[in-house]
Image 1 (cartoon, helix red, strand yellow):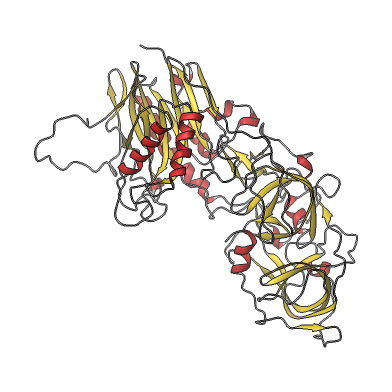
Image 2: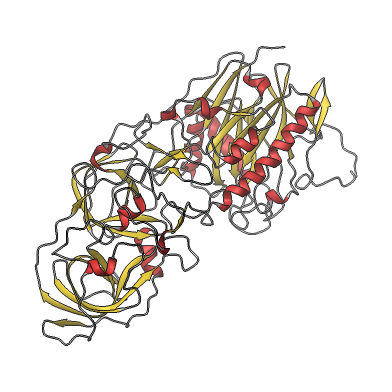
Amino acid sequence: MHGLRRLLAAAVLVAPLAAPVAMAGAAHAAAPAVRIRDIQGTAHISPLNGSAVARVPGVVTALTGNGFWMQDPRPDKDDATAEGVFVFTRTRPDVAVGDSVRVDGEVAEFRPGGGSSGGLTRTEIGAGRITVEAHGAPLPAPVVVGAGGRRAPGQVIDRAHGNVERGGAFDPRRDGIDFYESLEGMRIEIRDAVAVGPSRHGEIPVLPAGGAGAGPRTERGGILLRPGDWRRVGDANPERVILDDALAPLPGMNVGDRLPGANHGVLDYGYGAYHLLLTATPRREAGELAREATRPQRRGELAVATARLDGLNPATPPARFTDLAGDIVTGLRSPDLITISGLGDNSGPDDDGTVTADQTVAQLITSISAAGGPAYDWRSVTPRDNADGGEEGDNRRNGFLFRTDRGLAFVDRPSLTDPLPEDPPEGPDPAVTAVEPVRRGGTAGLSLSPGRIAPGDAAWAGTRKPVAGELTWQGHRIIVIANQWFPRTTQDQPFFGRNQPPSRPTLWRRDAQARVVAGFVRSVQKVDRNAKVIVAGELNDPETSAPVRTLSEGTGLKALAAGLPPGDRYTAISDGNSEVLDHILLSPSLRRNKHEFDVVHRNAEFAGHPDDRDPAVVRIAMPRK
């Protein structure tokens, strides 16, 4: 269940079990007659919230399982007052699209997600009586959104600070959150829409009018999120329109696909965003977007990449293993080292005490070989059961895939080849033992390899711990750290929420994690200030964010994504906003070498692909010592 369906399934209002439907001439409650614009007002909360209303006129524009939308056929000239509203009937309403009705009931504000949610409300009438006065009335003309009609503000969601539901200026011309509120419940028309994100969970983010006037755009047809600091949102692209399949099926779409002509729907709010619920399935015109492939590494170049496995386990459909193998072999050209995040244990989400992942790894390595890739090996630290967050029993972990046929070697400490006594003493548990830098061979090495960074630190409570590995490449000793920092969750308030700027509590969790990793890197550099260090993986924040800056401060680490052209600077698409969430950072000692960084766009822009992140790869020229 998704989109408006989630919203309606969760709706709980004080209303009769069924809304009686009467024909013209029925008695009405002795409440004052009002129009929809009086109910909507020029604010996010109705001025009549909690009040009884009677004989509210409208034409039914769309139906759903527990209510309908209606719109006033005689609008005023004030664009700030919406002329549409949802009528909540609890059960399937006994009206039809095109019915001219009058509604008695009580005005209410429904907040999807409950009272503690940071989202906005939807203004509704809890129906007490519905009077059908005529059938077959013409539908009110839709409001065209985009070029040739009303244009959403291009950058600003809200200029003020505070709770938008408690007053302040209401300016649909300048604030995106007010622009869409002023259209709540109304018929909307978008023309020649272009997708700026793939179809996911029944939703498609689009730009009207082929994206005319919107920006900045990616090189492949998306639209870039330009983040601000913690005090402001930045440019979250309020010109995006999120299509929802709650009323009609939507086609699967990739970035750059188009919906030619005019499409109509009603504008609704649910779970942190305004959604346009199309009332008919649109026609899709496919674009020409192709999955990218990077160039292969050359002799003397070390290729290091990222890959997100998102809970891969032996029960995962074989096609998923095939897709991942294709990303590694075809897209990334079989890099020397891949930092892996999110590999699941042998029993996947079954909470049966299993923590080992050798079967998952074997199946992945076999798939890579079947795709024509080289033989890969694997290193990680097995976690304790249900200690690293995520779904119970999943036991996802970070680690390394590496090939040894081009000169790369993983340094195991303790050595996997050391002879063991017949009855070895019980040693420290690597899942909870912190790795430390030590001096080896004139530079920095690790006390454990692979080893976890500060696994007991509170920053990692209930999350996956970073894993450090020591490797050698043609005489060079390198320390690589694989990461999967705390993700964005529903703890974070939405862009289109009541609090502006929205609170981002998970950002501070990631900033705390950045401090731990940065402290470890600095301890390595105390052993050898020229130590070769790579930090890679899911940092889940853009290159300009506080956590990524925290990681760089005092370490000299640099996020390589910052050097890409802006139109190529993204690894993920969130509700149509393209942004960098996956990173590779190099220490100064490595960055001085000639290097080339590439985000390989293979996943984030495509519908039906199980992964929503693009991998990245850096090729570093490292001549033999």
